Length: 460
Image (cartoon, rainbow, N blue to C red; front, side, top):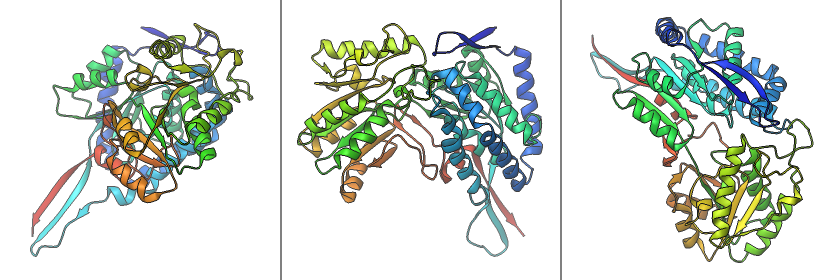
């Protein structure tokens, strides 16, 4: 079956591809199983060298890859190459740098007459289901460490960004990765579900919506395999009374609107101490009006279209519901000439007078829209931040490090930030709680989910 990638820039067909046939899927699974026997026994230093060459391939082609990203999902071209040269490279090279110390056998205390240790075995074949919003940043979290750990990888990318899967294949081919160790498949949802149930898959790594995560879990229910889930977010920020206002405004507005708000860990809810509320809102509105909404191929554009018109319509529905319940919109869309109702081009919006009972503050909007609420104190801020079905990240804007640690202990979230947001440090575990998912990628802990322990208890 054929599918088309429609560019949000102008609604044109950017590329067309075919879903894999049943025979092609079966062959890919068999080839991965065959290749993994040799790959798992390949010296780690050689696996590291191959992965580094592949990363270098991405560095060398960052500009053209960035242009592809812009065409496929609409992020301004002034930013897209940096997905490769900054985030992708940083994460890949960090996981490469810690591979040796985290994939060696685990030693236990010596016991006379015995040799004892725990090895870290690869799982087998890892199926990576990657999204369109950060097509390389999300997928590299698993692909590079999975290969380093001795697994084979089959990548299924979102139909909005199919060229990303093909770029990975080019990079690994250029690096001399043995055939079958990395493969990609373009598949329908039904084909993905069937593939997860196949005994040729040993682990599934999914990044996407809560509904998508439930579908993946349902497909895996009859099998004893692991499934890592990085799902939705409704990430809050708390601007405390002692915050540096200018820095908080600059970073929170960027955290809310970068990538047209289409980020799992983007800021969607802001709680500001009542003493700073008026000044924060005024400064945020002023800064928001500086954005340039328009053609993402224009280097002056700082806010591109959303991925599709239906996504913008969903966000507008959240805004409309909030307005009907008493919220107030502070941005006049006419300030952004490229804004067009019914299209993917959506002006940014700031809402006040909102509450957690509104969809704009409770459901993932995934758009350049943010709600701001005045709070009386730390206790109210903590309650409102935790009053969510999601728990991916939360940020605290304060000068008090000890307070940030204390509040962080009470926040129901996978990552706690102080005076920053919307960033993944590869040295730290990337994880979520509640409906934001389960499992962990990146950091030393990221290798644990991609290997299994095997104990050796050898009497001499």
